Length: 276
Ligand SMILES: [Zn+2]
Ligand SMILES: [Zn+2]
Image (cartoon, rainbow, N blue to C red; front, side, top):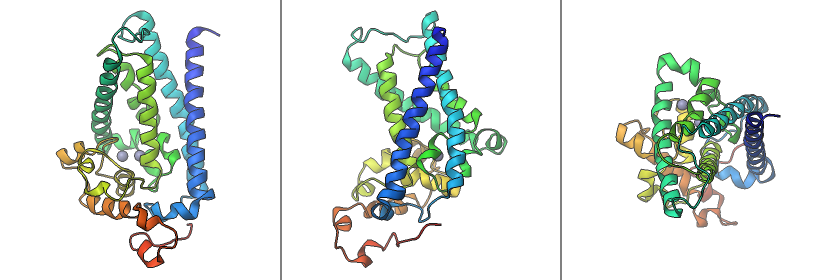
C-alpha cells in the first residue's frame, strides 16, 4: 500500500469510526436507555423514525470518505512544501498553538456561516444542501448527512487554512475534535445549556442546539455553527430564537431536574410525549 493510500484509508476509517461510535452512544443513551430522563430536554417533542437514521448513516459514510480525501490533500500539499503544515511542535511554542486554534475556529465559523447561507439560495439548495434538510427533526447522525458537494465545501476549509499560517497537525486534531463535539451537540436534538445561559452575555456569542434545531425545523435563519454573532449582526437570527432558547434552557435548572418535582412545574415548556 502506498503512503498516500495509507493516509486516505487511516483518516477515512478514523473519522467514520469515531463518528459512528459517538453518535451511536449519544443516540442509545438519549433515545433508548435514558429516554425518559432526556425527554424533558428534547427540543422537538417527537422522535425520528428508523428510516431517517439509515439514510443519515448512508450519506455520512460518503461524507467521511470526502473528509478523508481532504486530509490526504492537506498532507500531500505539505509533502510538496506548498502549504505551512509543520511537524515540529516546539518550533513556535504553546501560545502560538492556542492562538492558531482560536483563529481557526473563528475562520471556520465565518466559512460555515457564509457558505451555508449561500447554499440556501434557490440555485444552490438542491445541489448542495437538500439532503441535510431532509431531517427537519435532527439526530446526532444528521451531522454528516450531507450532499457530496456540501461535504466538499466544508472539507476544503482545512487545506485552504494550511496555506495561511504555520499550523501543527496536533492543532488540527484539537480543532477537529472540538468542532466534531459542537457538531454533535447542535444536532443532538437536546438542549444542554443551563438555565442561566439564555440570560447571560454568552448567549449573544455562542450558538446552541436550540438555534440549529430551529434552522432544521423552519428551513431558514440561524445559519451559524459555533457562534450566534454572525446571525445577530447580519439579521438572520430567527425572531423567536431567544424566547425558545429561554424555554428550553429553563428545564436544565437544578430545581426542575430534581426528582420529586411536581409534574406541572416540569412540563410547562416541555409536555411529556410519546414516540412518533
Ligand atoms: Zn441549512
Ligand atoms: Zn444541521
